[in-house]
Image (cartoon, rainbow, N blue to C red):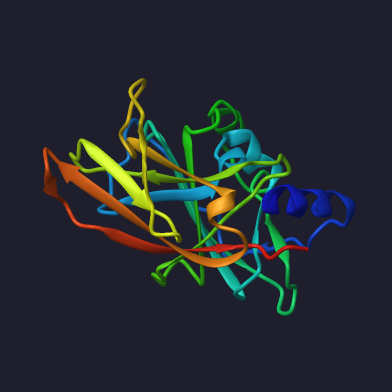
Length: 220
C-alpha cells in the first residue's frame, strides 16, 4: 500500500529530480568482478528492471546526497553514481538515469529481477548501513533484497517482527552478481526505517548474519 500511494502521488505531483554529481560512471564487460558485499540490491520489486531504471527511480529524500548502484545479475553491466538532492526537498526524489546512460538498449533488456538496484544515503565515498528503498511508477506489494550467498545453500531473513522467512534461489541464467532474492511483504515493513537480518548457512554451518536498515518513504 505504501509504495502504491507514493507512486500515485508522484503521478499527480511530480517530485523533484536529483542532479548528477560529477561524471556518469558505467561499465560494460563480459563479467564484472564480484565484490565482498552480501547485499547487492534493495528495492521495490517493480523497480528491479532496466525499464524501471530508465523511467527514473524514486527514493526517500532523507539525505542531501544519494549513491545509486546498478548491477546486472549476469555481471555484464555495472554503474555507480552520486546524486545531489535539493535541501529541504522532503518526501521522495527522482534519480534520473536515462538522461546520462550510454547503454539504454542493453539496460532495457534486463527484466524484473535481473538488475540489482542499491541506493544509499550520502556520496559513493561513504559506506552507511542504511539502504534507501527505490520505487517505480508501478505499484509493488513487496521489497526485494538481492543477495550474493557466497556458497550458502540456505538463505533466509528475519523481518522487523522477528519471524523468519525463506529466500528464493535463482536457478536459471547466470548468477554472477547475486543468486538469492528475499521478498519482504510491505505488510511487514510499513513506513520509516526498519531492520532486516539476512541469514546464510552452508550445509548447516552458519556463514554470518547481515543486519541492514531499510529506509522507506513515509505515508503521504
